[in-house]
Amino acid sequence: MRNLYAIYRKEMRHYFVSPIAYVCIGFFLLVSAYFFNFFLSAVIQQSFQMEMQSMQFGMPPQFDVPGQVMRAFLGLLSTLILFITPFLTMGVFAEERKRGTMELLMTSPISEIQIVLGKFLASLSLFALMLLPTASYVIYMYLHSDPIPPWRVLLAGYAGILLLGGSLLALGTFISSLTENQLIAAVLTFVAFLFLWVLDLGHTSEGGLGSVLQYLSASRHYDDFARGIIDTSGLIYYLSFMVLFVFLTVRSIDSMRWRRA
Amino acid sequence: MIEVQDLTKAYGAVTAVDHVSFTVNKGEILGFLGPNGAGKTTTMRILTGYMPATSGTAKIAGFDVFGDSMEVRRHIGYLPETPPVYPDMAVEDYLDFVARIKNVPAEKRAARVTEAMRKTNLEDRGAELIKRLSRGYKQRVGIAQALVHDPDVIILDEPTVGLDPKQIIEVRNLIKGLAGDHTIILSTHILPEVSMTCDRVVIINKGKIAAVDTPQNLTSQLKGGQKIRVEVQAPEKALRDALAQVPGTTRLEAEQLPAGGHLVAIVETAQGADIRSAIAAKIVQNGWPLFELRGVSLSLEEIFLELTTDDAAHAQASSN
Ligand SMILES: Nc1ncnc2c1ncn2[C@@H]1O[C@H](COP(=O)(O)OP(=O)(O)OP(=O)(O)O)[C@@H](O)[C@H]1O
Ligand SMILES: [Mg+2]
Image (cartoon, rainbow over all chains, first blue to last red):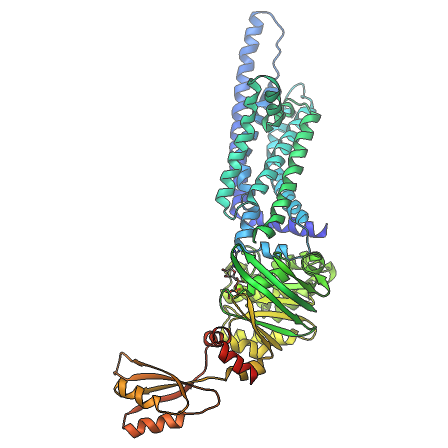
């Protein structure tokens, strides 16, 4: 446990001395703030139109502005992290291998699982830190809504994005353990993410395969969370995804000893 | 403390380490001497558990380096061929990190880090980022890293590479000072390095052990053959004939120097015979101007040639 913390601590420090973390966080906050603003004004405008229409036809106004904004915003966040997380994980192992520091880690009394978990938890913490400010936009909107929408929707949405992000980070960490080249790691990670995304297209095809693909798609489960539903099958999907790739990373760095042969 | 038995490592078709056996006693310094590609780094990587051997066994402090890797790793400090440093960390933070992953208890950590920096003369560089350090200083950080947890066994892959002459002497003294409490293996391709620091030397070439001995015995063996360099102004043919007549000459090479047109001859003799005066007499007798006459010590490469390719010379040397 102490060893795991040592790795975690080192990784966190590393993130904050490297420009990558700042560039990613800055870019993420800027783009997300811009789009939040954009969604909010677009949805409000739409709701005015709807209200006028419903007054003409004499129906009670039924338009959930915060819910609409939230859904659009969570959709945007999921797309953004698709582009950003590869940069957070590309160096996790590729850099250690290239610098030769893997030789220090692998000859220290510390297990592979401690190394991998320490690194994974660090990237997840950084991701959470990056996400945190965006919650303030949503909270601001909530506090200015009447009636205040259920907080459950906010919590489910952010739980969803954390789970999705964690899964992408675990996958990216694994890919980083396969190469010494950070750029290759980033590109491969991005390609793998896209692949996971489009699995959802199986949605349109008929029969068992379609539903299996749909289950495997990372974006599909995310939609439930974005609608405020904490879905157990989604929770299990993301958690097992993370466990699987953490495990595969452990196997991968363990097999490096043998691959040197 | 360290027992290596028939250790073999094959990379595909290349056998990097070929049935190597040796032991190191507690408190001893063992030098691993060999030319590039001899298998020094490979052997050390197996000993530290960085990679497995193809066959054979190695034990450190009674633990098998493969089967009991964790236990072995608790007992060793290791300086790899390239210092395993994080460029973005400050020296002190880096050593603190290493102390943590080497399980140094929290209350001892600061003292250990300070001690390691003191031993490697890094005291005034603690706050400096490693990427700003010169190569020699990085190497020192690498050495400090191998000492920080005060391990029983220290394995150093070419510890003096990249250091200036003053530092080399300091590091050698540091290593000598560590012996006794620590068991040390170091690798090098510098012959004087082993004779100055090590209790025993393993000479390895092409993955095979060519000799294991104390530096004293080894150097006396290697004094076997001798070479004499003669710079003289003379016709080449005549010089060759004249030198060939000197008793004790075993081999002769002559070469024209570009500037001044002098001739340089390298005369090899059998061991023990000092034929310098005989050569001088011969040259004077012919009336050629003599510019230089001196003994040339054998370079490491030549020693390897002697130890590995020339079996006759080897047999002769070791029977001595
Ligand atoms: N990862 C590897 N894959 C394939 N062959 C390798 C590998 N590492 C080393 N070798 C080969 O094994 C042999 C021994 O290499 P090693 O690095 O152990 O030598 P060394 O004695 O440390 O040399 P140097 O003095 O140059 O550091 C060399 O022929 C080398 O080419
Ligand atoms: Mg080497």
